[in-house]
Length: 184
Image (cartoon, rainbow, N blue to C red):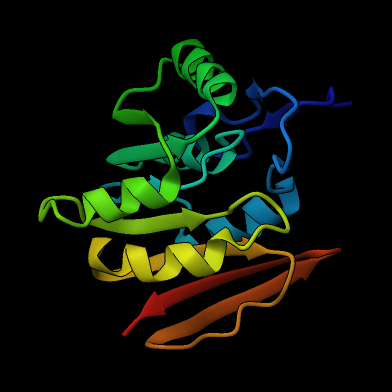
């Protein structure tokens, strides 16, 4: 049985390894079943993909992407305490090609948009559960999208696409809505 404040990586080179995270308001890792579905949608091998985990939290999505061969993952987490746990997990796993930014996600996205090289193939948007940050983040990430980029959105309400967003896949597990979208 899994300990609380731990999550299991479900695929790739770190399959079955556990990562720990501290108690923090709004931090609620994506469930195993949801992550398994997401990576079935994305493909089991993310070789060559550049990923951004904008609200990293436990790091489950970013570490899962690295475990499955992502070329690089950028994790952004505002909480210093949670960031320290992400750093410890990266060291324990021997994570290469990981950049960790202890910063506000919205400020990071705005600043990164000015860098023409900061383009991503896969983005994970899983803000603190029940927050309004998703609506604020979506317009800020558009300049960061690479060609044919896919964006994973996890929230308490179903994603209603507007302004160029198109739903590719959608699912629900309990109170959590999870959606894979693209921007046309």
